Length: 376
Ligand SMILES: [Zn+2]
Ligand SMILES: [Zn+2]
Image (cartoon, rainbow, N blue to C red; front, side, top):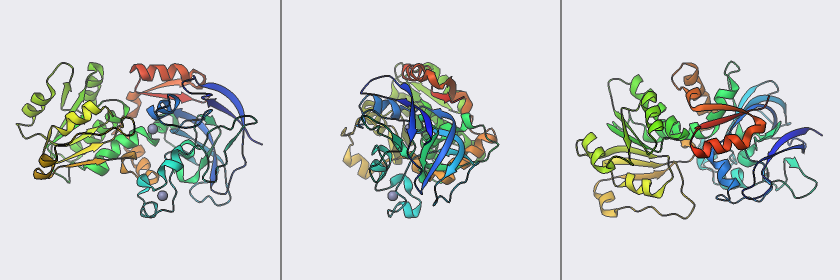
């Protein structure tokens, strides 16, 4: 029986507790990973706070990086000793998974938030109330972690694991929204706005800046919008050409001035705030595309002027995990990082694993964009 260290949320709104646990035997499609680092994403905190329902106690964590210790008998994507990043889970069998559109897997909710393996069993054992496990196919707040092969992304072993671990969810989402959905060069976007400059929004700014600098013959403006002046300053250093503090400036008139009255060609909302989303939808120009990346609580409705949408041929679409096939997209982002074109470290702060509750507080206060827990 393999022993592990788990950071458990014992009940709704309770802080994380460090416990020694035992892991279930590896199934044929599972991988045992010795984690070096696990980063924290807002979705972990949303479950802790009951905004996404899962039974407690729960072992969360869905951004990790480490080295493979052992593989199940059917595993083909990696072997012992490989360096890996953990990403979201998918069924691998539905019509979308078969086309590598794993981000829109029909069983996405069950695979990522189901709280167990597909057969209902748990990867982490308990002799009292069972833990909810298999969060995003990994529950990377447990080391070593039992990970579904679908969640495994193999990477170059020269990459620093504590830096690239955060590519698994938030950064993939923000960058993918630009590379895979907005596609500013192909769509001939001139005015792109990014609403909400947290970790995800920063990844969108970095991706947009990368495309702008590598395609100098098709320049476009990158407009970052937030209510936090420090984050807007950071957005400038990452490549935003304009920043708008929507607490201090009138958003609509400022955007109309920047775009010479035509409105935005593309917009990405990373805030998940309904007021911000409705504001974004109001600023779209003819033939534009607006993308929702951040989510308000399930059941919330946005407001759209349908005639305006119709006559302007505007599109408003949802985007989960940056429409990215993680097994190929994450290595490409990691390569950009290695070339200095995706400066992840500037957004991160490291903590020893036992300081997880401090790390979460710092993130919620807005002092840290991406806390990274180090396992040793
Ligand atoms: Zn599927
Ligand atoms: Zn996440």
